[in-house]
Amino acid sequence: MVESGEKWGFKEMFIGEYRHSIDEKGRIALPAKFRGKLSDGVVITKGLENVLVVYTKEEWEKIAPKLSSMPYTQANARAFSRMVLSGANDCSLDKQGRINIPQNLREFAKLKTNAVIVGVYSRIEVWDTKEWEEYKARVEKDSTQIAEQLESLEM
Image (tube, rainbow, N blue to C red; front, top):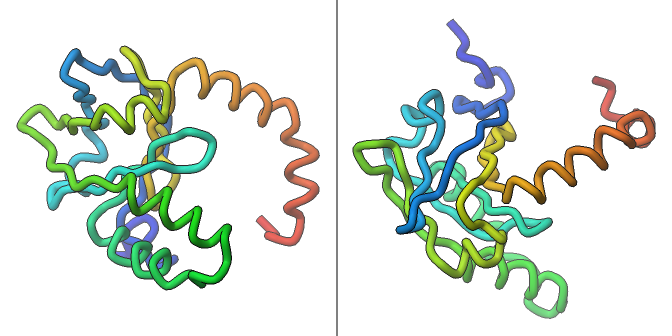
């Protein structure tokens, strides 16, 4: 039997939107339905749009070499790889399915007491609630135009 996502070459699939609180120590519980796929630990790092990105160790092992092999002679490549790689932290889930988000990453993503966890197929994104609501409203408002620009994907 083919597991969801396996036919595209990816066994773990993260989808959905979940709201969770961040405790005073900077810990956040990951959705229960994601936890089995994260038992080997995760890597959390800076992403685009001031979002945090959580990768499985397996997925991170594919992404990190690509980032480190970007052309050092190109300023944008250096800047992007530095941002992502310098922000990366190994994390393990505790018994309650929580990860500890380091202070520098919480500041980067403007996280305080509440967050939205978004499954984006091969990665998990952690958003500040207000930032997520604003982003989602913009995207939903422009969804027809966005879809037309992506017509070549043939969904």
